[in-house]
Length: 562
Picture 1 (spheres, rainbow, N blue to C red):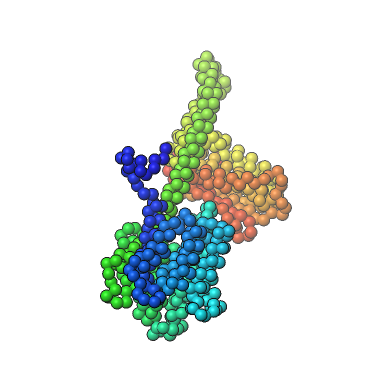
Picture 2: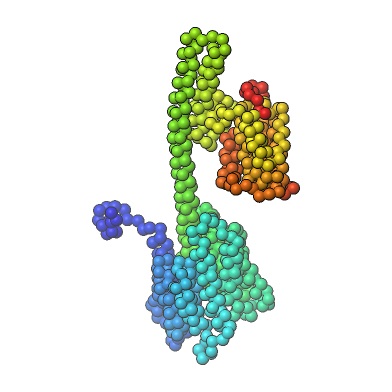
């Protein structure tokens, strides 16, 4: 049962604001602080403006940002209408609204479809054009280019981010980086070009610096700290040599700070926050007499916004990664439980019948059997005991498939499909592939018999699967070469083939699990499998199976390999 906040307080339970609510409050406070810092209630109308007018405009512009995450459409429409009203009244709040309106359009484009985004974008562009046109002057093509571009850039970025939702891609680069670079250039150029002639530097130098500052956002996700330093340097240079461009470039530094806050630890975030506040103060404050405690708090609040948003997004990303890891771990636990259940069933069924066989063989032996019959019964009894030991090893391996096979071979003879003689498996594989039209050259080194039976059995199964894949993909008529060699510490298998002369038969469809099965076999020994194109246009498969104890004589197990 969900308790309302008042009842929680009355019952003594702690009342805590959710992370989303804190973010909404922070957005509203930062929007209000931005207007106080930029506009300070100034207006171009007749007569001085009372102090309450500035506070009222700041609240009207900033408080709706608290609803931006949940109601971006109405907020964008409201800001567009307020922009026109403030333009007619001559309030300098239009400077703040020209920053908040593109942000709201980007959020709207990311969270809603074109049914909301397109009408709101048209209204926002029209409101921006009205604000740009001076009284008595017609709206020119340059004005329309500025107004449409200022709204189109965040809309395109928001639509792209909306298209990426639900995809299993943690890094949608490079398109997102290109959009960030394009949006940065559009924002920096469109908001500063009227002031390129007002500084000491030539126009081309100012334009180049502005475009470089915007392009830097293209690498902000990869080098957020370097981009933040670059944007801070650009702000200081712009304030010194290109007046009135620093206020527009300030937003680029705030974006870099927000991205940096998602990646860095708190000490580094605090240092970046102090740097950004210092640079913003240099750009915003022209006269030391304008420094007041209220403006200092407003500036710090404005810089706090990207830090809060960045940390919030960083926490969300960490939670998403943790949830994905937890889901994968639960799936792995379920698979392990199923493997253990199957292993127990196999052990119970086979052990019952083998145990009965051993018991009867022992009874017959002690009943007085002699000659060849006694030898056969003794062999049956010994073989049955070995099979029971192998089944216990199989149960141990299936309980933990990630555990590599160690030097204790008594527990390593544990895979059920390894009980067949490796030489029989190889001969059968070559015979079947040859009958299907595949030309096979098999070369097995004499030293390979030094490998334990469990290793040789796995190598034989890998050769079998490799030849089957050759027939599936290269087709009859292809030539396959198989090399099985013994190295000081591993048994290696190599299967090479050239292009075939006909299509694979319909009776051999590919189920796509052959290579995965080989990798699982080799991982059980701590080995590896590689597969890839060969120089002659065919395919090469190599597998390395480490031999416990270096394959010395103490690892030798009876049985012929080939």
